[in-house]
Image (tube, rainbow, N blue to C red; front, side):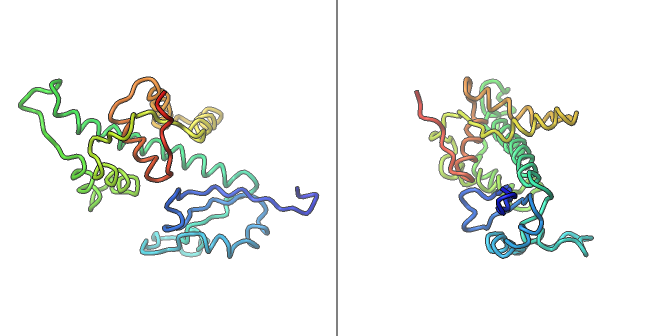
Length: 219
């Protein structure tokens, strides 16, 4: 492409179906001059600083990062950063899924009667959104899904993966970097296609909320 005068950028983009409203987080790789040339477009698509305060100690660094987009380096670097972003996303989602599954199952015969609690998962999710260390957008989306139906009856728990988690694990193996949490989260998605729990329903609900991902039709 370069020989023909065509400059190509890879732009890993996060924001899902909410990006039009919230703005898109963009991770850019390729020719630096081309990225600078397109800067007005990236600035228009990015979320901007909004109400998020600047991180202390960032003086003198690229201010565009605080706007929600970043030039990561040469070709491929933008998609590499986005790939690892999605691997982390798998792990975060899995942690919430397992936590809510534990909360739900504390009121089952497997637990001694004097230690059972009938917890409202929608209310717990809403509570954690406010001042909690685990408050996050993924938790916000979980709260929406649980408020609509705390049993998540719309979902079977069959969780697909779009490939980035696999590629992240492959990169970790190549670099000899332990990635136990990310690997376990990916393997859980594989297992979900044979054996579903409430945790997998939470995963499906989050994927639908942020990306519009639908479970495959029931066979």
